[in-house]
Length: 415
Ligand code: HEM
Image (cartoon, rainbow, N blue to C red; front, side, top):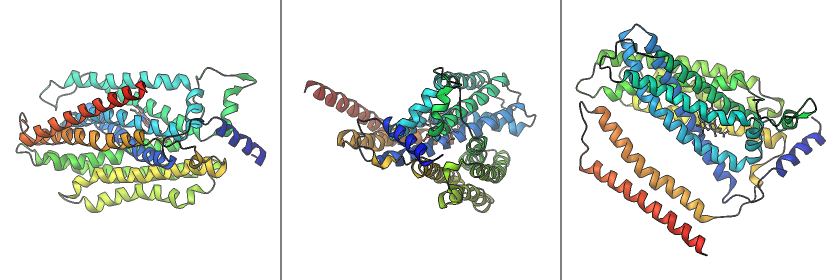
């Protein structure tokens, strides 16, 4: 592209920007976008990896694999909900700072954006169908029923992820938007196509499900080993599978990362050999090596670190992914989110952070405590006084939040 063509693309992107501005500094949205994307993709990977283990268990004749498959289905179910809920956050942030790109990409593939929801619902249903067909069976070593539904669930989840990947990739090609919109001299309003994708990039993000699921297995052994009814032979076997998955998975992901870096578009400049370009891949490889060194034997302390470490590695990859986006859109096309018009609104910014920290924190602390204690109790778990108090406090905080929300709303409305 010559300088005049680049200037035209730059002008187009600025023309598409929301003139209303944003309520606080754009870097805050970017930082939150990166953080929440890392959390989203971590749970996506956990969900995909544990679903894969469920599938392997479902089709295996081995009693341990069958038990493990049933146990990991419990994790997969929860992870899907968390991945979806947390997915909303980067969606909000990316459309604030990169609105010209996100919306254009969505409109160009509108049918897919809409079908995304339908496919996701079907995927979720299929997983629950499998669960309901099998959860009443006490003997988890028997062959599960309706295995096809778990296959359908995982396949649809991957299609959903692919749609997200394609939308993200299309954002990075503003030079092609007009061409995609105007095909063979006619305007294509249909939104029926996904125009761009990178098999390496997609495979890289998906493949991280292997080491993350491996980390889950190591954590699973540690968590369940304290129960009086723990079957240590089975748990040790699960952890040894987990360690292998962590190492093999991180090597596979590193190779895919290198493939992604080697196939970056010209507009990415020297990103692949830059600090962040190298760090992203190095972090993934480091994860496998860390697991190899720190998770030897029982690893009673480090076993609990395996999943948080995965999140940290994911955060490094998320930063590197964001720097790549900035390098393309700013470095090549001269579009910078830093010059977004800011119309400071302290109430909405403050409310966001307080909601995140206080409302989210108190409710999450309660739920996690209950889940933790229930998982380690043999039989039915009855919460003690402190845990009950945590629940009461969480409900009070949510009630106060709703009261202030409507009070401020009515006050503004009455002005
Ligand atoms: C449950 C199935 C899902 C899978 C397998 C999945 C997978 C992925 C993958 C692989 C990416 C990275 C794409 C790339 O950078 O190339 C991604 C990005 C993203 N996902 Fe998901 N996702 C799922 C569900 C969702 C849901 C339900 C939402 C929103 C409610 C969501 C919101 C996002 C957003 C906003 C991004 C891009 C953020 C950005 O560009 O900064 N995802 N997802």
